[in-house]
Amino acid sequence: MARDNNGPQSDSATLLELLRTPPPKEQARSARNRAAVLDAAARLFAEHGVEAVSMDQVAAAAGVGKGTLYRRFGDKSGLAAALLDARERVLQEAILHGPPPLGPGAAAEERLTAFIDAYFDYLLENLALIRTSETAAVGARYRIGAYRFWHRHTAILLSDTPDPEHAAHALLAALAAEHVAALLPELGEQRLRAGLIRLARSAMRTQAPAPERDSVLAPGRGHGDAEADHGDATDSPDQGKPLG
Image (cartoon, rainbow, N blue to C red; front, side, top):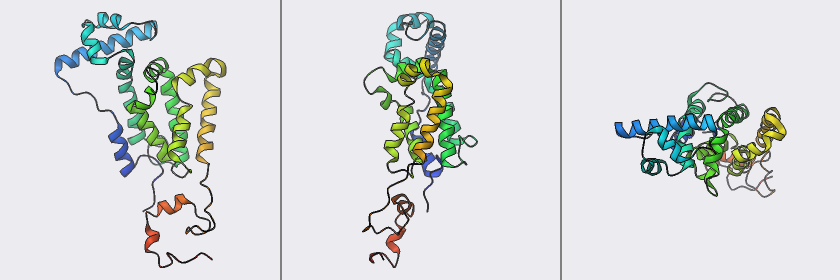
Protein backbone atom coordinates (compact mmCIF):
# COMPACT_ATOMS: atom_id res chain seq x y z
CA MET A 1 0.00 0.00 0.00
CA ALA A 2 1.38 3.40 -0.97
CA ARG A 3 2.03 6.01 1.65
CA ASP A 4 -0.51 8.74 2.18
CA ASN A 5 1.29 12.09 2.26
CA ASN A 6 -1.83 14.17 1.73
CA GLY A 7 -2.10 14.75 5.45
CA PRO A 8 -4.44 13.30 8.05
CA GLN A 9 -6.32 10.35 6.60
CA SER A 10 -6.79 6.80 7.96
CA ASP A 11 -3.85 5.88 10.21
CA SER A 12 -2.38 9.40 10.01
CA ALA A 13 -5.68 10.91 11.11
CA THR A 14 -5.92 8.47 14.01
CA LEU A 15 -2.46 9.47 15.21
CA LEU A 16 -3.32 13.15 15.04
CA GLU A 17 -6.58 12.56 16.91
CA LEU A 18 -4.51 11.07 19.73
CA LEU A 19 -2.31 14.19 19.82
CA ARG A 20 -5.26 16.51 20.36
CA THR A 21 -5.88 17.78 23.88
CA PRO A 22 -9.36 16.61 24.96
CA PRO A 23 -11.68 19.05 26.71
CA PRO A 24 -11.30 18.79 30.49
CA LYS A 25 -13.77 16.57 32.35
CA GLU A 26 -14.83 18.11 35.64
CA GLN A 27 -17.66 18.54 38.10
CA ALA A 28 -20.26 21.24 37.53
CA ARG A 29 -18.86 23.65 40.14
CA SER A 30 -15.30 23.28 38.83
CA ALA A 31 -16.54 23.78 35.28
CA ARG A 32 -18.34 26.99 36.30
CA ASN A 33 -15.24 28.33 38.05
CA ARG A 34 -13.08 27.48 35.04
CA ALA A 35 -15.48 29.21 32.66
CA ALA A 36 -15.61 32.29 34.92
CA VAL A 37 -11.80 32.48 35.06
CA LEU A 38 -11.40 32.10 31.31
CA ASP A 39 -14.10 34.67 30.57
CA ALA A 40 -12.49 37.15 32.97
CA ALA A 41 -9.02 36.52 31.61
CA ALA A 42 -10.14 36.90 28.00
CA ARG A 43 -11.86 40.20 28.81
CA LEU A 44 -8.94 41.64 30.80
CA PHE A 45 -6.35 40.53 28.26
CA ALA A 46 -8.37 42.10 25.44
CA GLU A 47 -8.78 45.37 27.35
CA HIS A 48 -5.29 45.78 28.81
CA GLY A 49 -2.97 43.34 27.06
CA VAL A 50 -1.62 40.06 28.39
CA GLU A 51 1.53 41.55 29.91
CA ALA A 52 -0.33 44.21 31.88
CA VAL A 53 -2.77 41.85 33.64
CA SER A 54 -1.82 40.02 36.83
CA MET A 55 -3.16 36.71 38.07
CA ASP A 56 -4.57 38.52 41.11
CA GLN A 57 -6.64 40.75 38.82
CA VAL A 58 -7.98 37.71 36.97
CA ALA A 59 -8.97 36.02 40.25
CA ALA A 60 -10.76 39.14 41.48
CA ALA A 61 -12.64 39.62 38.19
CA ALA A 62 -13.67 35.96 38.12
CA GLY A 63 -14.77 35.93 41.75
CA VAL A 64 -12.51 33.01 42.73
CA GLY A 65 -9.73 32.73 45.28
CA LYS A 66 -6.12 33.24 44.21
CA GLY A 67 -5.28 29.79 45.49
CA THR A 68 -7.93 28.25 43.27
CA LEU A 69 -6.59 30.12 40.26
CA TYR A 70 -2.98 29.12 40.83
CA ARG A 71 -3.84 25.48 41.60
CA ARG A 72 -5.91 25.25 38.44
CA PHE A 73 -3.69 27.07 35.94
CA GLY A 74 -0.26 27.36 37.58
CA ASP A 75 0.72 30.72 36.14
CA LYS A 76 -0.18 33.15 33.38
CA SER A 77 1.27 30.91 30.69
CA GLY A 78 -1.02 28.09 31.86
CA LEU A 79 -3.96 30.46 31.72
CA ALA A 80 -2.96 31.52 28.20
CA ALA A 81 -2.71 27.88 27.12
CA ALA A 82 -6.20 27.18 28.49
CA LEU A 83 -7.64 30.15 26.59
CA LEU A 84 -5.99 28.92 23.39
CA ASP A 85 -7.21 25.36 23.78
CA ALA A 86 -10.68 25.81 22.29
CA ARG A 87 -9.33 28.01 19.48
CA GLU A 88 -6.70 25.41 18.61
CA ARG A 89 -9.35 22.69 18.42
CA VAL A 90 -11.24 24.66 15.76
CA LEU A 91 -8.18 24.67 13.48
CA GLN A 92 -7.37 21.04 14.28
CA GLU A 93 -10.92 19.99 13.41
CA ALA A 94 -10.66 21.79 10.06
CA ILE A 95 -7.38 19.98 9.33
CA LEU A 96 -8.80 16.57 10.21
CA HIS A 97 -12.33 16.76 8.86
CA GLY A 98 -12.82 20.06 7.01
CA PRO A 99 -12.99 20.64 3.26
CA PRO A 100 -9.84 20.78 1.13
CA PRO A 101 -7.32 22.24 0.72
CA LEU A 102 -6.95 22.65 4.50
CA GLY A 103 -8.75 19.37 5.13
CA PRO A 104 -8.18 16.00 3.43
CA GLY A 105 -8.58 15.60 -0.33
CA ALA A 106 -6.03 18.03 -1.81
CA ALA A 107 -2.43 17.48 -2.92
CA ALA A 108 0.21 17.66 -0.20
CA GLU A 109 1.64 21.01 -1.37
CA GLU A 110 -1.82 22.59 -1.46
CA ARG A 111 -2.57 21.30 2.01
CA LEU A 112 0.73 22.53 3.39
CA THR A 113 0.33 26.07 2.05
CA ALA A 114 -3.30 26.12 3.24
CA PHE A 115 -2.17 25.07 6.72
CA ILE A 116 0.58 27.71 6.85
CA ASP A 117 -1.92 30.36 5.74
CA ALA A 118 -4.56 29.27 8.28
CA TYR A 119 -2.05 28.94 11.12
CA PHE A 120 -0.68 32.41 10.38
CA ASP A 121 -4.22 33.80 10.68
CA TYR A 122 -4.67 31.98 14.00
CA LEU A 123 -1.28 33.26 15.19
CA LEU A 124 -2.02 36.89 14.36
CA GLU A 125 -5.42 36.71 16.08
CA ASN A 126 -3.85 35.32 19.27
CA LEU A 127 -0.26 36.57 19.07
CA ALA A 128 0.12 37.80 22.65
CA LEU A 129 -1.45 34.69 24.16
CA ILE A 130 0.60 32.30 22.03
CA ARG A 131 3.77 34.25 22.76
CA THR A 132 3.09 33.99 26.50
CA SER A 133 2.45 30.25 26.34
CA GLU A 134 5.48 29.56 24.12
CA THR A 135 8.02 31.60 26.08
CA ALA A 136 7.07 30.76 29.68
CA ALA A 137 10.25 28.67 30.02
CA VAL A 138 13.08 27.44 27.84
CA GLY A 139 11.63 24.98 25.33
CA ALA A 140 8.04 25.57 26.45
CA ARG A 141 6.80 25.81 22.87
CA TYR A 142 7.92 22.29 22.06
CA ARG A 143 6.21 20.77 25.10
CA ILE A 144 2.79 22.17 24.23
CA GLY A 145 0.44 19.45 23.00
CA ALA A 146 -0.76 21.57 20.11
CA TYR A 147 2.79 21.95 18.78
CA ARG A 148 3.12 18.17 18.53
CA PHE A 149 -0.08 18.14 16.48
CA TRP A 150 1.13 20.90 14.11
CA HIS A 151 4.51 19.19 13.76
CA ARG A 152 3.08 15.76 12.98
CA HIS A 153 0.67 17.18 10.40
CA THR A 154 3.48 19.11 8.70
CA ALA A 155 5.84 16.11 8.74
CA ILE A 156 3.18 13.94 7.09
CA LEU A 157 2.78 16.46 4.30
CA LEU A 158 6.58 16.65 3.89
CA SER A 159 7.01 12.88 3.86
CA ASP A 160 8.69 12.86 0.44
CA THR A 161 11.53 15.13 1.60
CA PRO A 162 14.86 13.74 2.87
CA ASP A 163 14.08 14.36 6.58
CA PRO A 164 10.40 15.20 7.15
CA GLU A 165 10.74 15.51 10.94
CA HIS A 166 13.51 18.09 10.72
CA ALA A 167 11.87 19.92 7.80
CA ALA A 168 8.65 20.24 9.81
CA HIS A 169 10.48 21.70 12.82
CA ALA A 170 12.41 24.10 10.57
CA LEU A 171 9.25 25.33 8.85
CA LEU A 172 7.34 25.75 12.11
CA ALA A 173 10.26 27.70 13.58
CA ALA A 174 9.33 30.54 11.22
CA LEU A 175 5.88 30.56 12.86
CA ALA A 176 7.12 30.92 16.43
CA ALA A 177 5.19 33.73 18.12
CA GLU A 178 8.34 35.47 19.38
CA HIS A 179 9.83 35.42 15.88
CA VAL A 180 6.68 36.73 14.20
CA ALA A 181 6.16 39.42 16.85
CA ALA A 182 9.69 40.70 16.28
CA LEU A 183 9.39 40.80 12.47
CA LEU A 184 5.82 42.03 12.12
CA PRO A 185 6.54 45.75 12.71
CA GLU A 186 9.40 45.71 10.21
CA LEU A 187 8.03 43.49 7.42
CA GLY A 188 4.28 43.70 7.86
CA GLU A 189 1.64 40.99 7.60
CA GLN A 190 1.59 40.70 3.80
CA ARG A 191 5.36 40.18 3.40
CA LEU A 192 5.51 37.74 6.28
CA ARG A 193 2.64 35.68 4.88
CA ALA A 194 4.12 35.60 1.38
CA GLY A 195 7.53 34.63 2.74
CA LEU A 196 6.05 31.79 4.78
CA ILE A 197 4.20 30.41 1.76
CA ARG A 198 7.41 30.53 -0.31
CA LEU A 199 9.26 28.77 2.48
CA ALA A 200 6.64 26.02 2.61
CA ARG A 201 6.76 25.48 -1.16
CA SER A 202 10.55 25.41 -1.10
CA ALA A 203 10.55 22.78 1.65
CA MET A 204 8.00 20.75 -0.29
CA ARG A 205 10.16 20.65 -3.41
CA THR A 206 13.33 19.51 -1.67
CA GLN A 207 13.96 16.06 -3.07
CA ALA A 208 15.59 13.09 -1.41
CA PRO A 209 19.17 12.45 -2.61
CA ALA A 210 19.71 10.04 -5.47
CA PRO A 211 20.61 6.47 -4.40
CA GLU A 212 24.25 5.37 -4.36
CA ARG A 213 25.55 3.25 -7.24
CA ASP A 214 25.59 0.10 -5.11
CA SER A 215 22.08 0.68 -3.76
CA VAL A 216 19.52 -2.09 -4.23
CA LEU A 217 16.99 0.51 -5.34
CA ALA A 218 16.06 0.50 -9.03
CA PRO A 219 17.47 3.40 -11.10
CA GLY A 220 15.43 6.58 -10.88
CA ARG A 221 13.75 5.68 -7.58
CA GLY A 222 14.42 7.45 -4.29
CA HIS A 223 14.36 6.14 -0.77
CA GLY A 224 10.86 7.59 -0.35
CA ASP A 225 9.58 5.36 -3.16
CA ALA A 226 11.10 2.28 -1.61
CA GLU A 227 9.47 3.12 1.72
CA ALA A 228 6.14 3.53 -0.07
CA ASP A 229 6.26 -0.13 -1.08
CA HIS A 230 6.17 -1.11 2.62
CA GLY A 231 8.62 -3.90 2.12
CA ASP A 232 7.11 -5.38 -1.03
CA ALA A 233 10.58 -5.52 -2.58
CA THR A 234 11.51 -8.40 -0.29
CA ASP A 235 9.09 -10.62 -2.22
CA SER A 236 10.49 -9.71 -5.64
CA PRO A 237 12.18 -12.49 -7.62
CA ASP A 238 14.92 -9.97 -8.48
CA GLN A 239 15.72 -9.22 -4.83
CA GLY A 240 19.39 -9.73 -4.12
CA LYS A 241 20.50 -9.73 -7.78
CA PRO A 242 23.22 -7.20 -8.68
CA LEU A 243 22.13 -4.12 -10.58
CA GLY A 244 22.94 -3.73 -14.24
